[in-house]
Length: 261
Image: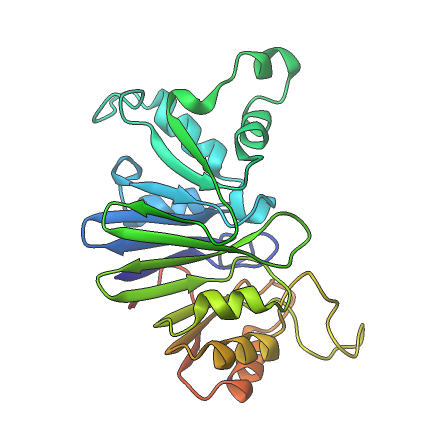
């Protein structure tokens, strides 16, 4: 299995990276996890969007899903598609509100919205806590995590290897349980554990660098990859926090970087 970072900037695109987006390759199977602002452009450097087997969204905040509209346009209006997209709708695994939310973002006016049904080129599969689904040889498992909206951590298993993506979450046991024994935990670290604004981070929103390391330790993962660092914080400082709480290898991801799992 291989992980390619399309974008890793937290809370929105930064000067050096799109917002959240990750391409997972397992043999001939390609799955995108999240597609935030700017990630669709980056995707085209690494894969033909027509060759995707599924897209999965951890949650529906714009920095994780804003570029879905670009994918809609690509599948509906590309002048030379390699196949009829209505005959091979692309599976989308996402929170239950995704069809309505994505249609409203794509067609904001009431008149256009009334005529918009994205199921011509997509099939939507609602995520649920503890549910699993198959994408070719890949198993996708989800757990509900602690964020400001309906949000999930995603586990990808294929060929005896495992990757867990935290999505956005505050500290929660569900992430530890999902990541138990995983080869790689791709984990958000959005802010420092101690700052001028708080003595401890607010609950139910994001993880600090220290908390990311603590979750990796509790889950017994093989490797920790830190992501979702906003442009206004230092990734190296958050990585240092994580490394102080996790004895295994830890790394700060970079856009366009690839990681073997």
